[in-house]
Length: 99
Image (cartoon, rainbow, N blue to C red; front, side):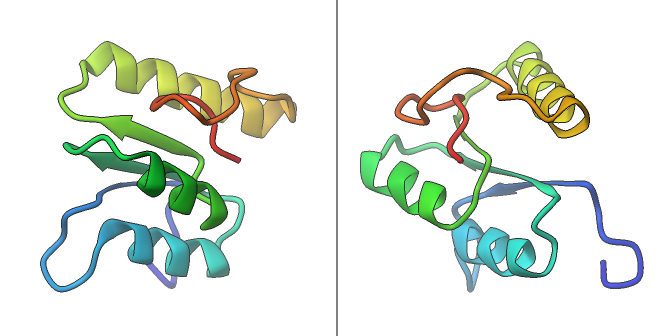
């Protein structure tokens, strides 16, 4: 990842040895322009707020449909290339923009 960092990272919150939020936060510190999406099976307002503070762009709850992930990616990439707000959202609802 150091030689060719990805433009997007989708990471589950529940990882062995490290939670996904820490991974995305560390990655985002070195690659702030990358799209960072955190997924979780456990809805949590606290986790959503922590993700927002850590620079995570989206927070999605499992299970999600392939269409939902496609819409999320489309919004994020459109925002990235157009410079606009991808959702107009507040980040309070999973699947909305967090930053």
